[in-house]
Image (tube, rainbow, N blue to C red; front, top):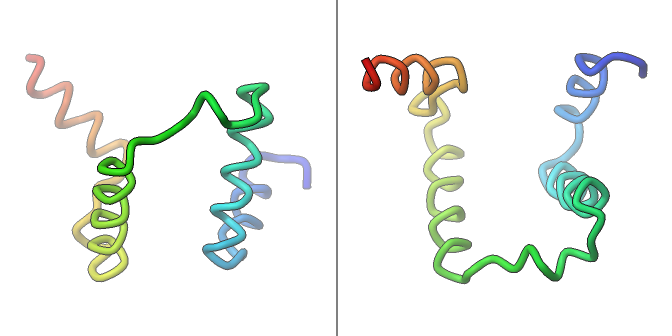
Length: 77
């Protein structure tokens, strides 16, 4: 795999648990840390779990990054 699009496509074929593991590895690699300084508060984890469950239940309610940027730009005038 040589392009970002090819890598992204390959990642999308992985089971969710493996995608999450890959993300964790990338965070540690890019952050150059053991992950200890990336401690996440438990209430944040719960909120993320709730939001991800809502997404899994109805992905059509999610926004793309481009949609989010457009809404943000519109609010800023």
